[in-house]
Amino acid sequence: MLIEACLKVGVVRFAPSEFEGPPARRPIFSDGGRDKLAVLHRLDEVRNYMQSTVFVCGMLYETFAPGGWASCGGGGWDTGCFLLDMKKKTATIPEDPQLGGANSTVCFTSAEDVGRFVSSALDLDYWPSELRMWGERLRMKDLIRIAEHIRG
Image (tube, rainbow, N blue to C red; front, side, top):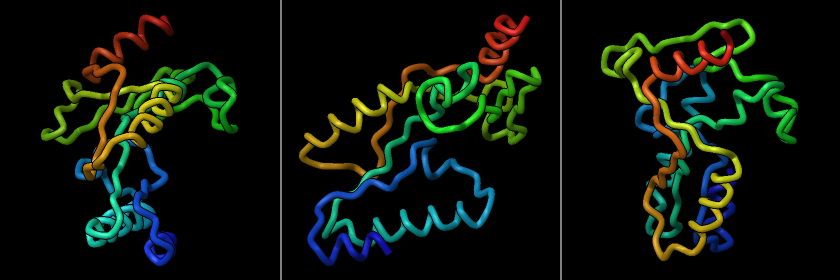
């Protein structure tokens, strides 16, 4: 495991390669979700030897660009369809009453801003278990209104 190798050679900081919502509020969709939780638990166990943080940025704006990530110069992802599918003109609203349904808050950040934030975090003396950022916070129903306006 990468964490064990880092510990062995004396790495002092580690950030898992994931950028999304807060770990405590993430649904587990598959075994991959459980693997992510196992990594976070292991990082908590070794916190006295190696600082770690999860960069929480919410959704990336570029997900909704026409043509998706490919049009922004990143990877081959097509236009995003998580929460909103702009091509099909559909939205998925969380049904969980604790999440607030259409009143739930969604955070967005640009990939460029995430890069600047991560770079700046390298200069911090201490890393907490989470470092949060966002460029915009919207209620889901407001996001849907914006999408309806854009798509007509």
